[in-house]
Length: 403
Ligand code: CTP
Image 1: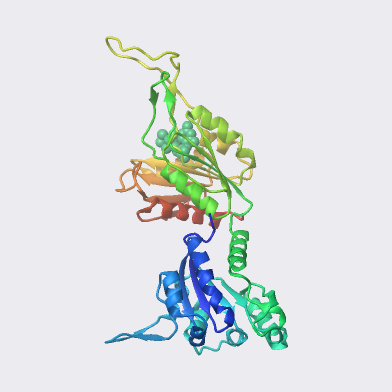
Image 2 (image 1 turned 90 degrees about the horizontal axis):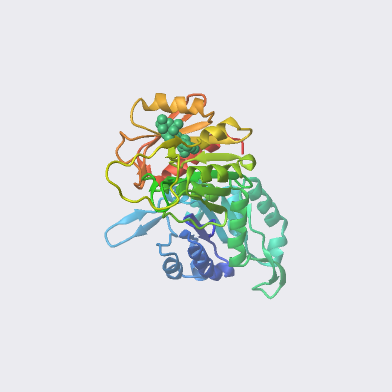
């Protein structure tokens, strides 16, 4: 899966012959799962049509400060476009545009968007050899890099003029891989290991029956996805669940009982940077598991239960450098109970769900959390999708770790 999946990319096209390649570039971004909007300089429309790029990007193309329809003139808000994007890419970036970007000249919409963009800006120069080698171009490129813009180096080869040398825009495939690699390299959890528990546990009564709970595993799986998106290597120890996850950075370890979850967790725990216990582990398990299916009889059937090991408390006990996060599902005295758990289990952070909050129950797609850290700082969040909640939890973790 590409790191660009779900990302918003603003492609700025300027007037170089390589602009024709942006049609292919847009297709590659769409294939990678990105959302694309295109901003063109007026002169670039001589090289590739807005219709081509709007069709391929599935979005209207912007090239002027305002657009006219029969009754109205509508302002193209360059600030909004700049804020919309996760990444901006200017490709091809001509010598003229590089110069204007360096000096803050704004004589078209693309330059206004560039100046207002808050996101990382990549630029892929494209021009003739002599223009590319000219001191002014070299200086402009250096200056733009000093500003924090990211250069996608020009390639060498045959140029439109017939000259052979440096100045060709990098090929669309190379532009996409350059951005993917650069983004991956800079992910905040790159090179870090995250251990997660998720789902319920099933405690066997006999070969066909068990004691379980209604945990769907969704929250834990969303956390695993988010951790991988942030670049971490993830070990997801999961109880029985219908959830699926497909990410090259996620290793899923399936377990059934609390005891198996404990064993699996402790075969990884020593080597991880962050551990999050999102599983709904059974607190009790039958003392004896019948070898054969228990037959129906007259009267009651007593089942003797013993306490399971508290996996999270055990992680807290043997904690070294790991940042440890637990969950608390409470019905009353929520904050006080959660703070108690945080201290008892030696956690760095606890995520509190209250069963009194609508939409925060087991199995749903939403959750409402409150996060408490070891210094008793409390952050309350509104009702959100579990995907957004996973992202919020990692923001809270990243604020408190130097990983
Ligand atoms: N947990 C665990 N192993 C257990 C029980 C719980 O790892 N055997 C973890 C859960 O994954 C969760 C946290 O501990 O992160 C809180 O679990 P909870 O059952 O709410 O807390 P308890 O300490 O068991 O207290 P109580 O059941 O009394 O609320």
